[in-house]
Structures are given as C-alpha cells and as structure tokens.
Length: 344
Image: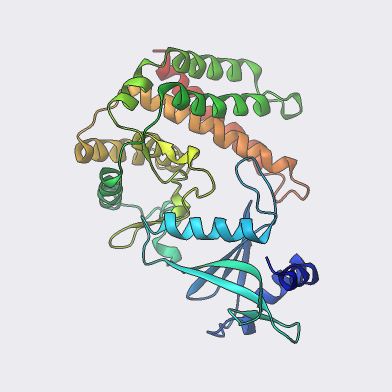
C-alpha cells in the first residue's frame, strides 16, 4: 500500500466513517433517510433502494478484518459468492475515499480508506422472516424456494474431502459449542446438555452415515448460513448473505442447510416448513437421507446457534443483553428433541 494510503487510514477514524455514511447527502441518489443497522461483523447502511455493507475492523476465528486489505478481500469474496444465488442483488464494491481537501466521498477519486459491498435493497415484505412473523407464508412459497435451492445444489460439484477432515470439521463445531454452553455462569441444565452432547458425540464417533454421504458425493460448497432473514420470496426466490469468510463452514450436505432452515422456521412458529422443505428437496435431488442423519444436522446446528447466542454476551458492548440466554435455551430445546431421534 502506498504511504499516503497509510496516512489516510490513520486520519479517518471508524467514528468518522460511520458518521459520514449515516448522512443522506453522502450517497449519489440523495435518499430522504439512511437507516443504520449493526451486525456481529458489519455495519449496514440502508437507503430506500440500496444497501451498503461496511466490515468492522475486527479479527475472529475465521478472518482477520483489521486491515483495509483484509476487509477489501472479504468484500470481494462476499460479492463473488453471493452472486451464485442472488446475481442481481450484489452490484459490486464501492470505495469510500478521502479527497485532497480531507473530506470523505462515496466512490470518489481520492485515497481509498474503506470498501463497501453495494447491494440492491430487497422488499421487506418478501423476506421469509417477515412472512413468518405476519403469518403469511404459504406452502407454495416453500416449494418454489426448494426448487431454487435444489437447482443450486444440483449445479455444485462434489468437494474433494477426506473423511477424517470432514468429521474433524463437524467435531470442531460440536466441541466449540460444548465448551461455551457448559460454562457455569450460563447455568444451562447440565443433564439436558449431557444428553444432547452424548447423542451428537456418539453419532459422530460412529460416523458411518456421514462417511456414506461423503462417499456418495453429497458434500458440496453451499451457502453456509441459510436463515429466514436471508431468503427473499421473490420470483424466483433469491438467497443473500452467504457465509463468505470460511470455505470450511460452507462445505456441507444440502440437507444440513435444509435442516438449519427448518430449525429456524420452527423457532418462528412454523414447524411445518422443515418437513415440506425436506420432502421437496428429496424429490428434486433424488436423495433420501435418513431421519437420524437429519436429526444430527438439526441438533448440531441448534447447539452452534445456542453457542453463538451466548457469544453475544461476551462482546465488549452487549446489544440486547436480555435476549441471548433465553434464545440459547430455546435452541437447546430443539437440540434435545433431535438427540432423542438420534438415539431412537
């Protein structure tokens, strides 16, 4: 990086970037307002027609975003990967620049001080989570979604992965979840946790069904974070916000992703979605995974989501502190039900 780029970064603080991007006058379209949302790894600036995502300068287990180069690479990967399922939504990258007069500019010609992912804003009323909250979701919506996902999964090549590596990836998620969920300060029911981790651990130790899935070429590079808030029920449906920062976490069985989405819909009082989605996907992919395999995927995903819920309580500034422990307990209820299917 050129010396003047280092100087520019030093002169422009995160606060200054956020303040500038929160102003309607910063954007070429001059929106009437800008809505700012914060996620675990990003700030998102919403105008009536657009969405602009800026990565936080942080490091975590899978990515180091503390440097401008690291954030740039992450933004490029996000656009490339998400164009697989939402090609018209991900428009590209926009540079935040510092001009010669030291003023910031959106897509200017000065020194780049930040990168943003530019997206088309999707209609809120078409998002799956919104449909679930308003009780407007129809079975036909799920069938159309299954067709879109099935086409995507059918286009993906089987990944070259050794069985010991695949099992190690799954075990890492299980062990990381156990380590956090069993911490005494969260006071989660020890007997329930023991039953969940016993069932998931034994299934993973056995490994035969998982090995058979890998040998049959069923493990692909998927989306990695298939949640209702990432699904737009347009025609055709589009799916956004894939897990861009770790290929390892995108190496999965399509029915793992389907189980995850079914879990999240069940949490939103639509337990019928998961079975319909699975039946539809089985027909499209000509694949019949067993009940114990799908229960393992559900239980493992529920534990991971419980762990990620509690991880919010370890942040320096905790957003919605009363939300995360009840949410973790809710996920564990689903994991406990799945563990009974595994052991049946």
